[in-house]
Length: 496
Ligand SMILES: NC(=O)C1=CN([C@@H]2O[C@H](COP(=O)(O)OP(=O)(O)OC[C@H]3O[C@@H](n4cnc5c(N)ncnc54)[C@H](OP(=O)(O)O)[C@@H]3O)[C@@H](O)[C@H]2O)C=CC1
Ligand SMILES: CC(=O)C(=O)O
Ligand SMILES: [Mg+2]
Image 1 (cartoon, rainbow, N blue to C red):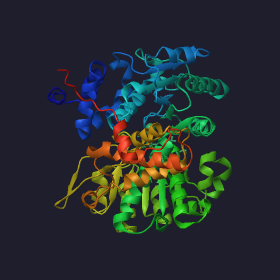
Image 2 (image 1 turned 120 degrees about the vertical axis):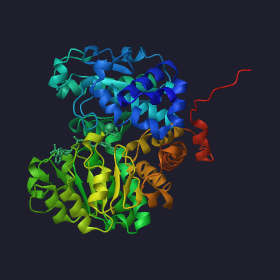
Image 3 (image 1 turned 180 degrees about the vertical axis):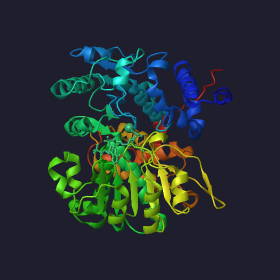
Image 4 (image 1 turned 45 degrees about the horizontal axis):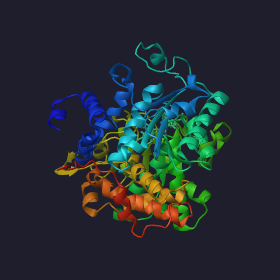
């Protein structure tokens, strides 16, 4: 830590950590676990975003497995080149929507590598059981295509049948080599592929889309926790999203499902409390014909509205959620409008990295006179406001996927079910204390994340058993203890 702290530039800390991961994996995890709050922003968002943008010029050694279109017909052979065979989790991207930074082609490899290091550090999955994969089907990023240090295919992205066949070969090969119980986490695919892949492979593979499902579960947890302290139910709220893609519609759907379960109303009815704005304005019935399929359930009867601030004034939300990937879109007008409507406006700016956050913690607190309940996708430092220290929470799927993954692995689950996501949300929300909330947090601190992950894993596994989706039989009696016993720890053994 002394060495790492010498570096002033976050990207240099990132490179030092990547070197350490390569040369002394155990020490890398020991540091990451013991200093999680300090090092998460280094190996994960926001620094991993900059690392992906500059991947070609900071490249030292390959990490993870690149599978390029040139290897079509030979993916099984390529997988066999990986030194480990006992793989339990794969995080795979095609690099088309890396955080809110757009198409970074195969430079997106930083994301599967970073997510999997969290699987190990936060969720206790053995490092050797984790496989980061980047599918290289080209890039539409003109700057990268011209960049002399770009390490990927220099062609525009394969699409349509060519793309679908390549992904299918990958999915088939993975099941053939690692079996039915390998967890495949789709990460940072563009939405025109993400929804389709999840639907197509959801019934044949153990797949999970972190951006759609993990984000939904973490946001729901934060809302359940917040309502526990401010009172009211989910169904009492009105929700407005800026951004109607994977994260936005994923969260909206899980919230509607939870509201429908809580109040016994059909999910279609619950959806009416949720409104979304995309790059063309409020999603309303008159736009139906031109809407992508994942937006259609959210088209309600209303006159068209172009500006977010006008949508806030018309819809009167109690909760405002940013999932647009566009920074500083929650302007002073928008936050002030939320504060005028609500005593305690809930404002979540989820977009990553920090540069893309819809507003900063300071802006949210200042423009709401310290009343906002605020959390962001990438971390912000605590803010002093009128003598009180307000601590912004981090609404990031990193709270969910490590525990969820551990729960799936330890129960031998063969499919992911929405009820498991709900179980994960409730397990996370239950960990938020009044002391946390009093400081402004709607999530527990990351310092306790391994205990939290064990709790999430236990509740997810319990749900897998209840649903008949678990294959590890008999069911362990104490699932929390069992989860803890399954977790990898970077301990230094005494050999004498
Ligand atoms: N905190 C967390 O845990 C997570 C955060 N995220 C973040 O969320 C962001 C979005 O990700 P994702 O949903 O996958 O991306 P998508 O590309 O699927 O969706 C982006 C949405 O934002 C809309 N949008 C873009 N620009 C504007 C604008 N100027 N005004 C209004 N709407 C706009 C798009 O509109 P249109 O459809 O019209 O193009 C689209 O609906 C990213 O920054 C990502 O980092 C994602 C997952 C997890
Ligand atoms: C956190 C995450 O998954 C994202 O920003 O895409
Ligand atoms: Mg993601």
